[in-house]
Structure formats: structure tokens, C-alpha cells
Image (cartoon, rainbow, N blue to C red):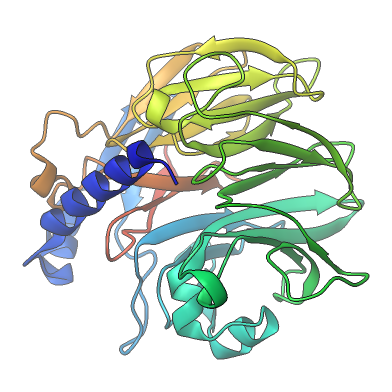
Length: 355
């Protein structure tokens, strides 16, 4: 793992912890409930739902990892928590279920080890069936090394295939030399793209049976080089699908063909993390305190919740700003869900309320 990555990771952790120290959930909710909190303007106006994402007593979030929505608009939230590892809500914020020991047993971990390695979650609909792809970060060393896996499950968390650091290979398990994978995307033809964003800075393309097709990438700032290639997405906003890569520490987005041939660079981002596509737009959470929305021509439509001018410790106290957006998604109605890399995940729903 690069020193540059460690510096950025440590910096964001310190900022996030400082921001929530001594801050009670009650005070945050009180501020949110005093008046409607709105982000954006015009057709891109969103209003905060202060009641979304609450967990029962005895359960808590950890650092926010990912949020996805299935075809029935069920919202799946995962964080670095050992209880609950995954929380599932409806669009009004009602908690439907939580996954902890039963789920972690399916993936061969206990809840504490899940909390140590949790990172990415990608929803995919393939041939009428729905799946999740999970990416694990690395924890421990030597014989105690955990993570470095990507696994595909159904929507109940049943493991269908595992790729990476596996004990043995079989029909549903394949060894692969990930150093620290961060995200997955699936193309319309079923090909699977995986970024090794906290490690080798490689981008891998597999077919739908997990056979390796092509690998590109190395550390650096040039074409085909990355510094924390944290997120990946297959954009279908143009006539031909394209691969978007969030080159986080280089502050840019790199765009490639499905064959992983370089096409163009989109500069000027503040630590872009990943992507989500909805209704002709591409949403990008930027770890440095904002969400950016692009149109099909890569033009900026709006910045949401920009907290750059707010002191870092105050960003999580300010409902109108983001602190460290790590992932996001929308539901079928265009409602926006954002999870942040802060100790309590700060998962929030912003209802689409066009002006």
C-alpha cells in the first residue's frame, strides 16, 4: 500500500473523528428537524428526511462503507460495524431487517472481522436476477491476513462465487492476487470490472464466469496510471458504454472503453470515490465534502452539500453540508442516499423535491 494512500486515509480519518467527537446524535437530529434542509436547486432539489436510517438500541453504525437499492427500492446500508453489519430499510426509513452473525457466517467471517474489512457493495441485475458484489479491504498480516476478496451473493447474502484470497479453489472459488480491492462494476454484457484501489492500482476485467480478460494500471499520474483508483462504474449515458474510474488521490476521473483503452480525463474533482447513474445523470461522492452531478456529456449540473467553506469539525454538525461522502445511490423515484466515512456512517436520505 502506498505512502500517499496512507497519508490521505489517515488525514480523512483524523478529520472525521474530530468532527464527531463530543457530538450527540440528538443534537444532530434536533438541528435537522428545526427546518427543512434542502440541497441543490431547480430540478436537482433534494430535501433531507431526518428520520431515515435509525437503528434500534444496542445497534450502531461504524465508518460508512456503501449503500445500494434493489429493484423493490429496499435500501441496503453497510458500515464497519459488527452490529449491524448490514441494515435494510424501505424508502420511508422503516427498518426491515438487519444482518449480522447469520450473514457473516455465510462469508466465512465473524462480525468483528467483517467490520475490519468491509468496504464496497455493488448491486447488479443480470438476466432478470439480482445480485450483490462485495469488496473487502485487507486487515492483518501473514497467516492472519483477512480480506482481499470480491464475492458475489444473492440478495439474501448467500455466496455464489468468491475471487481473491481463498483457502482453496473449487467451482465457486478462485484464487486471485488482489492486494486491496475497493469496487466492482458489471457491464451490460456481463463482464466484471474490479479496481485494486488501495493496493496495486490495477484495473481488472473478467468475463461473467470470472475468467480474466485484461489488466491495466500502475501507480502514477499519467494515462493508465492511478493514485487510489477507488471506484469504477460502467456508464450507459452515451451510445456506447464507457468505464469511469474514480482516481481519488489524483483528483480526477479517468474514462476508458469497455476494452480498457484510454479515452479521456475529467479533472477538478475533490477525492472522487465512486459513481451512481440515474435518469440521465452520473452522481459522484467526493470524499472532500461534496457530491457532484454530471450530465451525459460530462458537464457539471450541480454540486450538492459542498462543505469546503465550513470548518472540518463542523461539517457533520451542519445538515446542509457533507463531511466525507464515501458512497451513494438513488432509488427509482430519484431520492438520494449518501453514506459518509465518519464513525457513525451518517447515512442520510434526501428526497427528490424538484422546485
